[in-house]
Amino acid sequence: MNEVPVIVVNFKAYAEAEGTGSLSAAMICESISDETGVSIAVCPAMTELGYVARNINIPVFSQNADPYAPGPSTGWITPSMIKSSGAFGTLLNHSEHRQSMDQISDTIRLCKTSDLRTLVCAESADMASGIAVYSPDMIAVEPPELIGGDISVTDADPKVIANTVESVRSVNARIAVFCGAGVKTGKDVRNALDLGADGVLLASGVVRSKDQKASLLDLVKYL
Image (cartoon, rainbow, N blue to C red; front, side, top):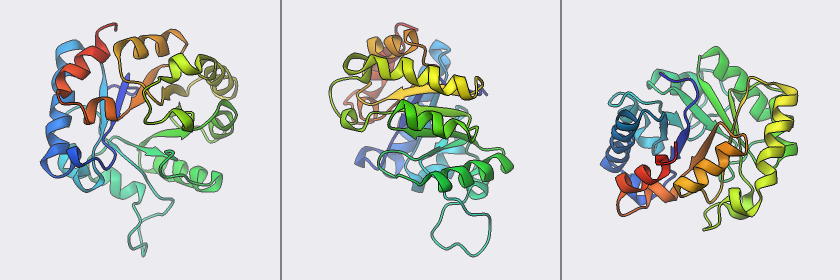
């Protein structure tokens, strides 16, 4: 299994990803990955995490993890629990689920003990460099004002990608850098990689598409 996917598709809590929708979308991502050779990872609905992870062979990420070890932590999602579900990694600090720096640090540490990969979101290059100190596996920069919009960060603010790559790698050159916010087309993906990113994090452009397979094929067509 590839350590660093090129495309990570976050299913969020969209209605399209409820119930069997998560596995259906994940299987489409897997088929495109197999067909094209492009590594694609998925972040299914939280209620479907284990079900999806046990039924596909591409990397599966949780949408969140909490900084708790196994024990009396009712309602929290521990890294150990995520790993035991069959997942490969987890998102942390998404714009829709922020964590403090202490929580990020503690959760990354617990993920490492569970051999769970971490993809931590940051809203700026400065935040990304601060997170890099804790040595996550991946960092995704997502300017919050562009998330869910129709303008890709690669067009609206390309410097933020290049600056994040530079600032993260000045701290730890082994951390992969992703970008997100408005990424929906193959051109957006190609631009992100040309700006130095290792991959992209996206959501609605695939999950809410009327033709998820066609949208994915468009995303990988310049790779």
